[in-house]
Amino acid sequence: MYRYALMILADRRDAEDVLQEVFATVLSKRTLPAIDDAGAYCRTAVRNAAYSLLRQRRTAAAFARVTAPERILEPVVPGCSPAEQAALEQALRALPPEQREVVHLHVYEGMTFQEVANATAESINTVSARYRYALARLRKGLASIS
Amino acid sequence: MHDRDIESLLRRYRPMAASHGLGDRITQSPNRQITKSDRTWPWAVAAAALLAISVGLHAAVPPAPDTSPLVDAQRVQAIAEELGGTPESRIMAEWIARHEALVEQEARLARAAAPELDRQ
Image (cartoon, rainbow over all chains, first blue to last red; front, side):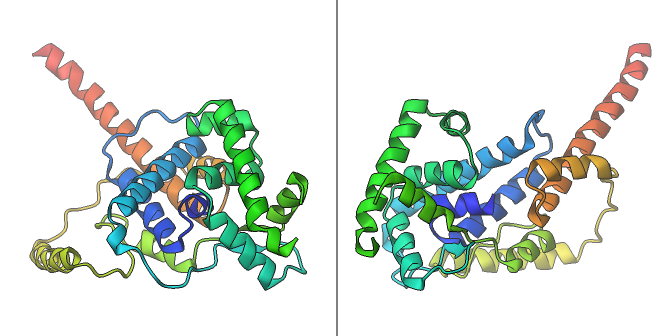
């Protein structure tokens, strides 16, 4: 769930805030709806909180941080170069959050486009288009290391 | 660079895991207000002062006994596995299970009270 929030927000502290907010909200509820799929319930809660935070950030652009961005990825195979990682992170940050989200759900959580569409309440055409656009933008952003 | 090259490059990495501090932050203050990261805004300072006063007043009142129901460990385990099986999933699973048990307990109490009302 943290990784999902991190990929939408591209900011570790924001992702931590979102996770804590979701946990606190769940705890504060006197009654919970019947949950058939706890994973989907939590994913939706994290998603809603993340996009809510993004909307606040957009309307409070004056608070934008000017510090260097933190790492958002970690290597899972040996032989990854810091330059490659930095380029990939920079290219990912340049994507709109909705595209990063589709990349995360499809690549890192192994969901099909139909499953991503269900999880994000979007049509499968929208989801596949976002993924296509994301890869195109990543390709452009990664041109320097290819 | 083809789509497959980009996908394989992406798969050489994964989003970073949560810091150990996040677990502590969540578990140590589950019922308190959400504590944001170290960003200082003017209203945040005022809110902190208000919170300090509230906590001071609250500390003067003896805490009520914990009436939360016992949590089914198997249910917690099942939810935690659905959420990915990480330590964070277990924390979330405990919360969900606790609330489920609370709702069930309230429903039981309501059912127990219903016959008495019928008799009246």
